Image (cartoon, rainbow, N blue to C red; front, side):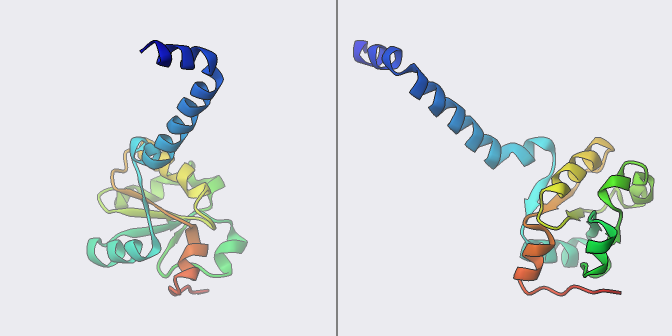
Amino acid sequence: MDQYISFVSQNWMLILALVVIVGMLLFNLFGSRLRGFKPVSPSAAVQIINHEDAIVLDIRDNNEYQNGHIINAIHIPQANLASRIGELEKYKSRPIIVGCRSGHRSAQACALLKKHGFESIYNLSGGVMAWQSANLPLTRK
C-alpha cells in the first residue's frame, strides 16, 4: 500500500491526466444521454422514420438545405429555431430526428428541443454527410 501512495505522490500529474482523460471518455460515451437525446446512425434513423413515424428536422442554412435534404424534412435554420419552436409543438409526441451537415450543430438544437419539453429526440450522427455516405436518398424539391 505504501508503494501506491508513494507512486501517486511522485506522479500526481500523470494521475490527474488519467482522471481527466477517463472523465472525457465517459462524457463522450454518455454525455448525450445525460443531456436527454440519443445519437442515431442514418440506418437507425430510417428505421425510426419508418416504424415510429419520426419527424426529420433539418437545421442547416438555406443554401445547404437547397443543395439536398432528407425527404419530407422540416427546415428551420438553427439561427431561427428558438423563435420558430412553436411550429414544432404539434410534433411533441412524435420522435424528432435533428440533422445538420456533420452532426455538431444538431446537438445544440437537440438540447434546445429538450429544454422545450420534447421527449423523444435523436441527433443524426454524422449529419447529412453520413446520410449521403450511407447512399440514402436526398431531394432538392
